[in-house]
Length: 134
Image (cartoon, rainbow, N blue to C red; front, top):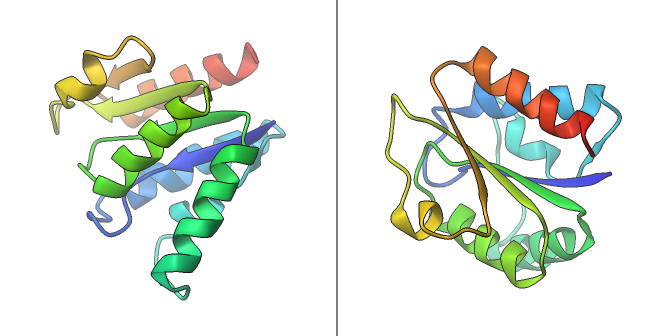
């Protein structure tokens, strides 16, 4: 399965370790993560903005599923979520309820499957459960 992973890049990287662990779990279960670079701990953007847009929207259209970690508010992640909804991609969103409150634009939209968590272990267990049912 091709998974588009959405996580903050320019909005802040304080959750990069969490992204990395989520991506490693997806890969260990045999899934292809199209946006594996989001989980790099010392990510350096080397592409121009137009290249990023073109590549990411292509990956979104090619993906079978979007997994998003939304603890850090990000305009880019919000755009990716709306884009995925437009193309009817299933979306599972995670956020640490101890660190943030998710926007009503997401929690009020029944399209998204939203999974609040308190610990990374709890989140990884839920992610594994979701991926096992695919």
